[in-house]
Image 1 (spheres, rainbow, N blue to C red):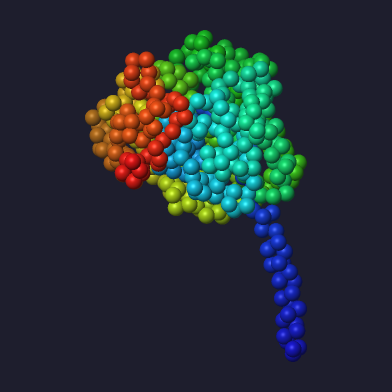
Image 2: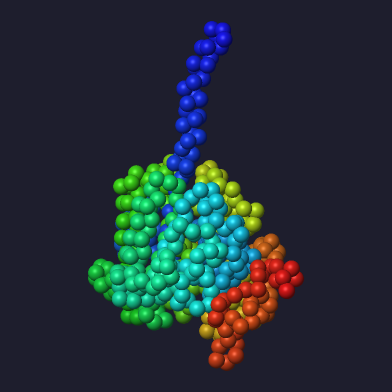
Length: 500
């Protein structure tokens, strides 16, 4: 070996050692993911969103340290459909999550947690699930119907009683255990333990809180007594599109108290990440499955509608290693969350994903990159689009609301001139050109997903196991299911004739 070869080898040795070290610690360098979402929390129910009444100091601080998205849209603003979009990355006609209490079909390695699990992540899920279908009061068995959350799974499936006396979860042995505290507090402690147990390896944790969803009655909203005391109903600022009544003020009090409780629990989560020095390389996300009308627009339903209070939700993402703090106006739909976060984590996005990987648009601050987000609600028979300027929806034949009553969902709202959607322009003659343009966009989205606008009753009869279809007392089909909530297979396969 000549002199120059020896010198060259000596110069390369430190570099080779660095490469060897990198090869030994790829897992440690990969970001963790902590995905937190509440149930029925609208975009305007955070202090950082401009709400001067609500008390959310931890999330406000978190928003200032990360990216706050102002235009995050729940494509299908009901519980099970959102969870299907989030965890499968697929449209309901592919995943099966087209209405509440449907048992979403297994992912065969292509769902969110399955991709992370197969990449070496410890995957944990804590909180509301609502994807197993049928009877809500039962555990979710280990296996394909946990969709990749094989490390830790602590859920009550869907229990709407959150107080310390009645809140519960199913443990890993399938036994019902009392929470012993207000549900989000107990669930957050379980989440903290998961982080502690997996701090030395890459992990992905999903934490699903049920509040501020209403409980103990159709329009009953409540929260821990100490949090209720923080809010004087008489002094709360109501949305400008809601009637001012004592009942509504009491709803706001309970709703905001629950939001503050969630915020307190979120603070515990972030404190643990900082304590373990994991906060710099953990992607932490906060969002909600859909919003809550809180009787805005004079409407009794609290979700499932195209109004902004129902479809617009918070989205906050913090990852100091890669994201600079800013406010982001990029249009993001629920369907985009799985591919986007996998893209940020440099993990393969399955070809079965039907959302968009917006990671580069986020990194490069391309806030105007997305023209429209699709909107669809199968049980109540409406479709449409959300754009930066407008919300447009139209009714399909046979549409009814959650009570089986014929209701009109068609709307055209101008966000620029009417941000609180006080005037529905759907019948305005001067808006004909805009309506036709947005209708064409809606039809294009439907075609992309193979959505023919089939009547909901016919859809249920074709794709569901007959014994699991629930009917009301008058014989009409409801938007929920009974028994096991089973599907014959993926709806698109059943409808195409691949599955009989």
